[in-house]
Image 1 (cartoon, rainbow, N blue to C red):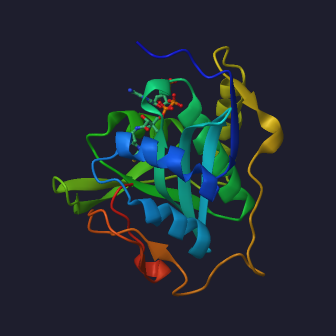
Image 2 (image 1 turned 120 degrees about the horizontal axis):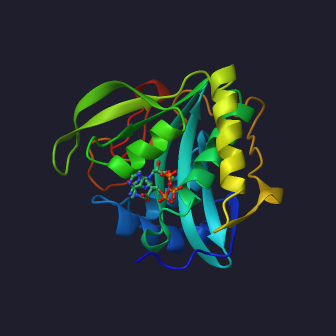
Length: 225
Ligand SMILES: CC(C)(COP(=O)(O)OP(=O)(O)OC[C@H]1O[C@@H](n2cnc3c(N)ncnc32)[C@H](O)[C@@H]1OP(=O)(O)O)[C@@H](O)C(=O)NCCC(=O)NCCS
C-alpha cells in the first residue's frame, strides 16, 4: 500500500546538505547507484549541471538532474522516494526540469531509459518524450540497451500546450499540495552559463559506479538515463 502522501512539496535547487537524503533514494532506486562523491562533484564542479530536489519538510521526496549542453537539456538522473511514488512528485520534478531547460534556451530535452523501465517510460511519454533511437548494451549491469527519448521543440506550440495542461493537472491534484512560489531559479555561472568544452563531467558511462570524469560535452553519455 502506498504511504500517505506528503502534505507539501517544494521543488528547490539541490544543495550539498541534501545529499544524505538523495543518496538514500539513489540506493533504493538504482542497481548501480552513483557513489557519494559523485553528486557533490556535480554540484561543485560541473557548470553545465542543474540538480533539483522535491522537499517535504526536512525530507527529500525526490530529485532530478540535467546537463544543459548548448541548446539541449540532457536528463542525467531522476528518482522519487519509493514509498511516495505515483503521487505526482515525479511529474513535479520533470515540470521543473523542463521549465528550467526552456528558460535557459534549450531547444529539446533528451535522455536514456531502460526499455524495461515502464514507470519511467510512461512518465516521459506523458511529457512528450518519444523514442528516437537506441544505445546498444548501454547498461553494464545487465547489458540492456538504452532507449533514447527526446521531446519536440520545447518552444514549439505542441510542447508548450502539453506542458501547460499537465501543469494544471498536477496543480489540481487533491492528494498533494505544491508550493509554486519557489520554482527553481536559473543558476547562471558566467556570461553564457556554459562551462565550455572540457568543463563538463559525467558519471561513468560504462554503467559502473565510479567517480565522475572530465569529458567533452559532445561525447556526453551516462550510464543510467
Ligand atoms: C520513474 C519515477 C521517477 C516516477 O516517479 P513518481 O513520483 O512515481 O511519478 P508520478 O507519480 O509523478 O507519475 C507520473 C506518471 O508517471 C507514469 N508512471 C509512474 N509510475 C508508474 C507505474 N508504476 N506504472 C505505469 N506508469 C507509471 C504515469 O504516466 C504517471 O501518470 P499517471 O499517474 O497519470 O498515470 C519513479 O518510479 C522512480 O523513481 N523510479 C526509480 C528510478 C528510475 O527508474 N528513474 C528513472 C530512470 S530513467
